[in-house]
Length: 466
Ligand SMILES: Nc1nc2c(ncn2[C@@H]2O[C@H](COP(=O)(O)OP(=O)(O)OP(=O)(O)O)[C@@H](O)[C@H]2O)c(=O)[nH]1
Ligand SMILES: [Mg+2]
Image 1 (cartoon, rainbow, N blue to C red):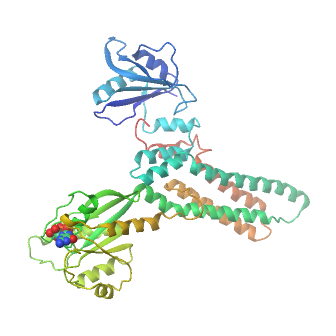
Image 2: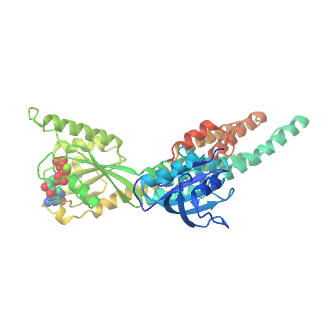
């Protein structure tokens, strides 16, 4: 395998940039451009020296160099890391020297792919590296670290060990029964498979939670114009993000921004107010209609809708209608402008909306923000979505794992159906268990280190230098 090199830190100006080299020639190539080359050349030490151009002997940058031996580096190959001064030109210049000395440019994810191919990581751990790099919240980071530490692999390997055991027993049985012609009766196999089926279901059930921890949750603010949606967005973000004015129809386009609530990333979107009383001949009508169409699109994608009402204005039939439209989605009812005298009572609101749930009061106006109830409402919803089902904290968040576990679960159901007959055809049962085994192995990638197609899909999601 050729020796590869890449910039592992983001391109651009910065204090330090790190260039990585991996492969059999990594140390030799590094020795051609680093001076003074350490006479002891111990591994995992930082050596201070200069990068120089071997042709012109010109010094280029003062850097730190680390060498790592094969078998104890990230990739499992000989590696060198050059910590040079940040700056795109400088790092590019050093990289081009490495290329001129025979290193190849590393494609995205190549370092982690080699780590996997050399058995330093299994596939779920390699996938966790992407998740860790991309994590945007505390919860996403913790979930990625758990997977990187091997949490999911351990879970899958335990299931695999049980399947192997059952399979081995059945293979023996197949031989025995062929000789003695007995009926197969092993109730403990059914019990074990039932337990595995349950574990598998619990893990599958964690998928939605896993997705949410990584990708966050989409929350959309809707309501009539002027009720204070943009004010509420600004208050939640603690930032004047959206324009606020007493003019109805101030917000025309969707404005999205992220914040963190309960460790989860919340993507909050403010939308154009919805109104039924558009003057069709007004010059603004077309613009307003476009804004409202966009609000409706956003509503479709929302995981949670915040319907904002202005308690100082009479409830309108349109708001009742709007509530009917969103009531089947997870939602929170927010009564804004609590600092003003109410124009309708809570009981009127409940009666007209046919609503029994919680009503969250708030003040979004800049000078006197009171939004605790809204934050608590969103946190409460997140809590219901992230509650752990089953007795395991292990979870899945990737489609690939989900699809394979669905196949494992279907296989277990099939195997249990066969066992229900009392006299299952053992070769069919064994075949079913082999399929399950194959899917479990595919999750950790234990038997696909040479399956190029699969690896390309997994590692193409990486950035260069990782
Ligand atoms: N008194 C009071 N005024 C508020 C409150 N929240 C917002 N406002 C005022 O209400 C007006 C409308 O606020 P916006 O946040 O622009 O309302 P909006 O719902 O985004 O309106 P559109 O963008 O037109 O749909 C502004 O003058 C705000 O200052 C509140 O809690 N109390
Ligand atoms: Mg607005």
